[in-house]
Image (cartoon, rainbow over all chains, first blue to last red; front, side):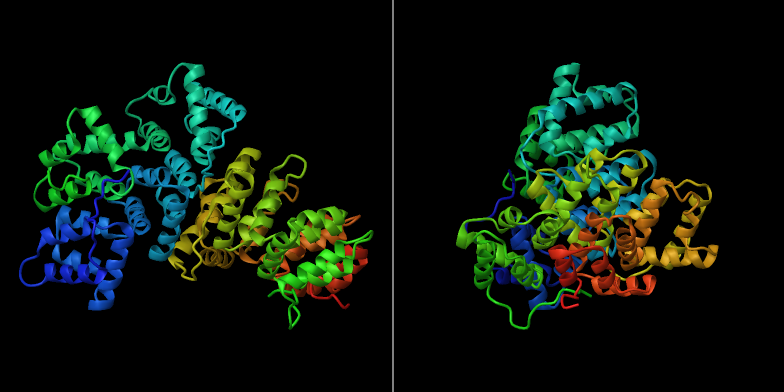
Length: 316
Length: 316
């Protein structure tokens, strides 16, 4: 469930473009107006605004926003305004660069998007970077991380609900054996996690829990500092309960000394239109404080306003 | 260039369906009429005939053909009539089964189709088998073959012409080093072959040839009986000059004691609408005999007629 709120009567893309043009005009910038418009339009509406803006003023709205805004507020407005597939392509590309490398972001995009949406990201990646997503991920990663991440971003998982229980049992056993042997990069473990449908994987992991007495992620916690194991556990979390994964990313971002705006912005921009409602519920339950109050405590100004608008607490 | 020939004035799908219905009626089957219609319609036209036939007679045309025809003739008519993506999904699925397993067929589909067409195969695979293509390929293969085939079927290569010569040089060097070390399954070699665009790969392999003095496939011929190396060389051939690869498959199928109808049928059914003209030219040049004469010498009856019709020599 999304937290994005859209007014009951939405102005036309032409009116929105005119208002945005006004917000950029003169010496100052009307940030409030930018939030009022962009933070309350869905992906299809934002796309139309971008098209209309370009047709009417001969300028790219994203370029204009880039010129007018700065720092964290700029980043969230730009990310949010991008089409979801383009946004993920951009984030994934950024995550393969030396200074902003992040195996987490790559894994997150590969595991929490639908198969169709992940394919759209791969198409957007071709269009924007003249390369393939898996090509860049494979080139910029090595060793165990590459073994896991390349098949994850290349997957096109079946999305039906059908579950083969015989298979679930046999593959739970394979997982248990490889984990007992500490063979965390074993090709069978990678195969199961990167190719099976989410429904099938869920059945396999439930069976694992029932028969072997522990949730798989508990058995994968032998060395809490091992970066690969941390990513592997996060992968399993993303595939089985993404809202818990995102709750944790938000929790760590907010609790961190100095706030991790990079993570906070990413999660809000990518989930507001998808499952932010559930993430909020999980956050409240886990931290005994509502997400909007936590966000307010850690951020300020237009950045804070934009975050709150997107998580559905614009008036708070 | 295709060898498929379509009459200048094509009957409507309704007329074609009526004629096919007539061909199935009574005691015998009019195979000539089936060939006359189906072997001279393109994929879009065949699709419309299937739809119209189902709407008009409440029967699946493929089921009808299956009931009326048999052996090699049945197989080629069924494969040909299928939508290309469905046909590839069917062939790939067959290739993962125990009795009909074929790493070649999987590799061929992954490497000789366009990125978009390969993705269509993956979609058709979901729809038909309720699983993903890479899931079945990963499950049914092991070891070195799995390492190569899973990324091949999962790839969505960039299809632009852009070439990065610096990269081509550095990756030609990586390929040469791994091959010199006989590390034929080295992850860098697999990465380059399975993720780079065909244009980029071509530049890399040309550079390899220029600098190291041999075509890469010559350097990969250290053990002519090694099944993995044979598949690796075929992969490179499919990625760089598919018409030569298919010429060889046809040559081996025809020269084989007893003819390999399975391969002959597959190549004709999958390439007639794509590049069979070039394959024919290569065949003639390499074997000093035209493909149609070679096919005629090795096959007979309706199967022969269908093959000749599809390779554009129906009147020969």
